[in-house]
Length: 74
Image (cartoon, rainbow, N blue to C red; front, side):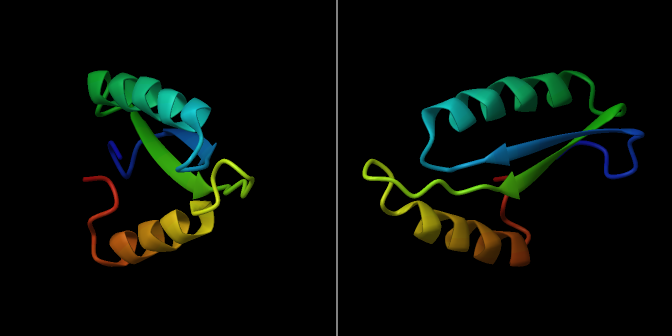
């Protein structure tokens, strides 16, 4: 997300089922959108399967499929 050629890269290691990851993503997405030429945001899968996020792995597999279809960020 952002400028693919930007000098500044922010890497978010996130879990789709984690509220903390969702909050961090929202904050970083807003920041990158405010500075679209200077930054790019890179998502790295870091699923944490627990009792509360049993479908976390499935969500991450879906994210990889969406990325292969150029539909990850939307």
